[in-house]
Amino acid sequence: MAKEVFMPKSGMDMQEGRIIRWLVKEGDRVREGDVLLEIETDKVAMEVEAPCDGILLRRFFDDGAVVPVVTIIAYIGEEGEEVPDKPSMAGGRERAEEAAFLTKGAPLPKREYEYQLAIIGGGPAGYTAALRAARLGAKTVLFEKDLMGGTCTNRGCIPMKSYLSAVRLKDELTGASKREIFPFEEEIRICFEKLFSEKEKTVSELRGNVEMLLGKANVEIVREEAVMIGRHHIKAGNRTYRAANTILATGAGTRKLSVPGSDIEGILDSEDMLKLKDVPESLIVIGGGVIGCEMAEAWQAFGSDVTIVEEREHLLPTFDEDVSKEIEKCLKRRGVKMELNAKVSHFKEQDGRPVLVLKDGSEMPAEKILCAVGRTPDLSCLGVLADKLDYERGKIMVDEYCRTNIDNIYACGDITNRSILAHSAMKMGDAAASTACGRPKMVRLNRAPLLLFTVPEAAGIGMTEPEARRQGDILVGRYPFYANGRAKAQGETEGFVKVIADKGYGEILGVHIVGPMATELIVEAKTMMDMEITVYEVAEIMHPHPTWSEAFMEACAAAIGECLEMP
Image 1 (cartoon, rainbow, N blue to C red):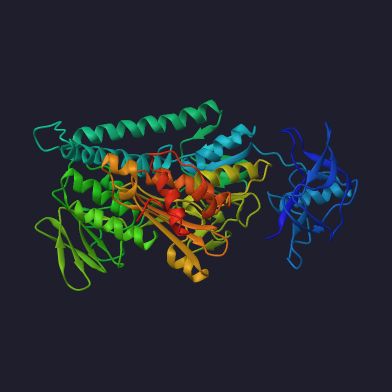
Image 2: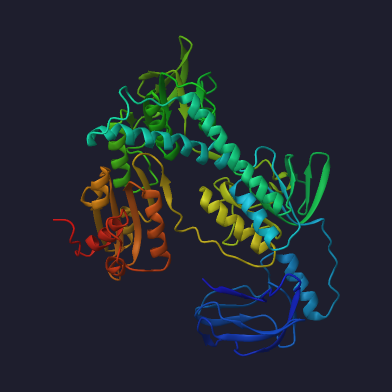
């Protein structure tokens, strides 16, 4: 894909630059780092380097042209690639028109806005975008109709991890007896009332941290529901706000099953579950994804009789199948029951309790039923833009800069077609704010790690084994934690590390982990994949002993038949 070359912004006050002279012409082949042209600002003369190897396919301005910062001035790619025939900018058509005005010597039209950037939504994408914009000196306003920090901080990731940390500790204490350690005479119980209180305290502290950071960055916060009433105008409360650019980051809400009886009392979503102050005697979890598996394990540990109902053949359909099977075994050992290949027909009420009725006619009563069947984007902020944006499967389409098809409108996180992970949303918020403030930044989400915080944990990145096999010949290396010294010493031997690599060059295509510290170990795998380090090279990297990280090295060695730590 052709890469953009744009007029750099060397300081917050820089608005334009003059091209002194081009050093290459269209059709010339260049290498990354070669000097393409020299420019001059009101403060300094500087060189603009090629961002990649390739051919200079198009250049838009001649020597002497005065060009606004961040205007695309050229494209580099490979022969035959199609590129635009007019200049544009990481802010869109409006700024391309400004570039044309300046090039022709015409006066630049005045456009004054109350804010350089408006952000709708205070979740991971929104507050990250606000902090980045503030760091770049942009006057920024952030709208949040509910709690700062979004779903992740208040109703998702953080409170759930607080619960699962208690489950992990209970597991460790229960296993202590194997080492002749008897910390308690009675059965280990989790005091749910106290745990709920601690969870609320943790959430409140983290939400406060987000608000403190925004306050110190001088981001204006408006605690009202915001709606777009124009490309540059936002209505919130009784006031209209004007912004040059807007980032939409309103996240997603829980999805309900569209079957009869879904409004019966006792049928909950994941946010309702985190509000419960008592542990239900029995719980049915509909949906075997990440949310369903984490909640099933937690409430089983709290004392509920838990059954997962999943319409597919395995749990965790987004993970590699080996990971899914291993997690199924681990959950079953903990007492979680499963109904796989089971499709929901409807709900009914019996003796004051909800009953799940499956398509085969079987009935499953429970004190509570959790519907963990995904999330839907919150598009309530779109207003007049609703029928003007481009969508994919009900989500807003954005490019690698988080730009929508409307020049000054950006979108990040769960409302887009790119990703539904908090860590992806934060990177998208950073990229959108940087681009909107005149410093284009791409975000690459093709290697966003999938995480599961059960005991043991699971994590995955890149291709699954079937996906990789469809692309060609591969190498597969697998290393079990029962062969790892650290795991053996600590009595945590469940799980494995699985590495998938291209057979020709050893490029790492995917890494899948079940076991202790899996959500941390996956970071090394991502780093190696981003740096294009092969399994041959990883197998030679010294890893400290005894550590969990050795398992990744040994799995890479196993892929090439060089693992010495397994018979």
